Length: 99
Length: 234
Image (cartoon, rainbow over all chains, first blue to last red; front, side, top):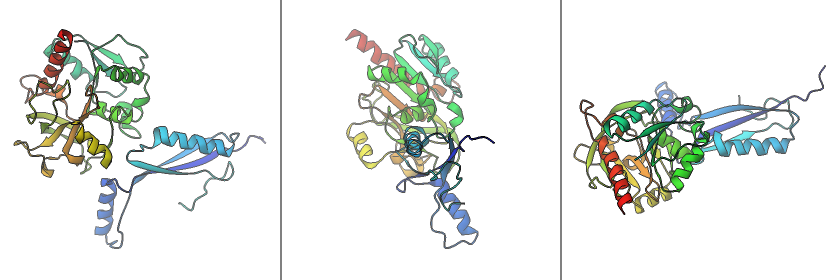
């Protein structure tokens, strides 16, 4: 048995800002509409990241570092916005209801 | 005039740029490796087209953290000429040396063809010899050239005459159907406030010799050379 702390599993979601046209999303929406899903009114495509941090890091440090990573590299603030989920404890896989 | 062509992992227009500088313009030119922390002073730095770092994450997003970018930034700050072509333009945007960002092309396809460009500003050393309103034929080749910036930035670009090239018809109309990629206001190229940093999606280096379909790319570099000559004699 190892007493090593399990890793933090962080999820990052990046999407185009609502004001920025998303040609991929529009194309997917049109395809779904033509497949008969007529009540679908909008699709926005984005990027999903899974970041793994050492479990020894404290939660606020994880949050701070993820935010820095998003600001510096993962998202482009001119056209994109981001959100991320850090679970309450290292080891928990998912905090949101997202599939 | 001494030129440097920056080579990122994935650049693929670096040799084209080197070739036209050396053989067509007959000026001294050297390659500059992306990992270089220092290099000999050059008068014009070219960030060439290609797919730096495989375009992973976003075009230019990873290249902007290359060691060489510190020297690119200094070159821009001291007023030296910097031109980013295609992927080079995307890198300049990600680096914040030019404002705005690139989105996927409106129709989601990679577009490789000749387009018409209207020269809307000759306040840069790259266009000072070209009469405003002149129409150039220069090819594009990109999947992400759909330029975007917010309203305030656009107003500033216009007020400061920093929109250098716009996609247009053969007659010079910047109509929506002359816009290949959905770019805001048909923008094909912009410069910084000082005019010494230019970013453009079209490839002037691909049309500088007879047999290439156009020699309009020469106009930019001949402007630059004449700007350098008058700076020397001033």
